[in-house]
Image (tube, rainbow over all chains, first blue to last red; front, side, top):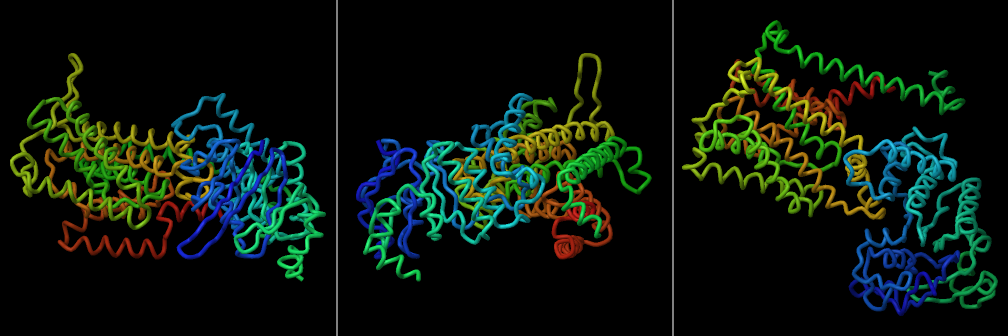
Length: 249
Length: 336
């Protein structure tokens, strides 16, 4: 069974059709890339999946259940976690505090006005584990707002991972990164996919990364589904060549 | 300069750990100093030309601002209506003493309950909006109570205020807590101020407090971590309302009087000014702001009726030169 399934989903904003008739199946454990020119509707699709927007028509299902009328907050609790095109972290707090909030939220502790010693240690252990996974330990006491862009992205990934996502949506995870940072992020994505079996849907413009890590690729163009297939199939697809890959050159 | 920079690069972690240890020590020392000054205030206040009731006034305003600051400084909700809960606390206490009981503790409890429940009840209405709209709704709700107090002459004494009640002594078996004595009443107030501090302090160190700060920092991020921001804003609003109500209840006892001015949005604005003056992002900022505000008011109002313009000027200068408040300014200086 597909973890995520979209059936004939459309979304209009007034007279503008951002997405029309999108059907999509993402099986459990897949690493799926979502590509398309600017304005193709990729981020809108993320907003529909995370419940931030409602589809005008069609249905989004997550692990077999319709997400209609489910709030974004509830969808997070069911395991859909996203990152944003523009990094969304707590800039005026330290890296440690960023992860502290994330971990406490993931453990459902937000309402607690105090914590037992045991709980406090659990929280600290989870934070340390995330720091290790993302190699953020050396930045623990730095303000997130003072970090390099790539490190901020890693903080955002750590926040996302604290919730042990079933479906991870990454909106241009390597945008604005240098080569070395891109390399690190790519390795991280592959690690999450291979070692942890997290289902990942990611928007990306860097073709090298996509062809490197993606199991399958979905191509959007002008709000429509243009093509879907393995990297090899997509590379050979004439429509895609015309609409997108050729256009980049 | 150079050595500090290279230390940062070479051994970021140990240097950080050391500086955080140092800043913790400094914080503990600062708090110890604050408590020592507060505990001995009745003894040194007269030496500075002050008097004990002035000290109690500072505590009351600090407590109200401390409550407001949980919402304003730490959760990021600009409320211009906290006088409503302060005033409800004052009226609750006054009316209880006047009509129901002569027990000061019961009256205090009634005031806290009235103001706190008021904030809890009206919180959900305010947290539906953010930013300037949130501020507007808090003013509107506050003014509602103000006009009720002005109009309901028979119960509240209208514009003249509520008189005809007096704080009473508390009896513990054979022992008597003589609240008529200013010094004893100061310590009575200090006791509740300490409770307010303990509540805010422990909340700020807990996941609940972390959630409040996260709301201030980035609501969108928090929402996409599955947190319903409005619900937590409401909790911050309610806790802060309860503390403001406690301050109001103590204020009624201090003056043996309360008036619609204690509900008015002008007073709400004063609380905001106190927080900003002292430093919204610091724990002791409201206390520092309140010392400045109350002392300047007391001193200047004996010289000129236009004392408010001086407060205004101080406020403008403070915002221009100390945008992080007085305490925030010094904290940043020390950290650099």
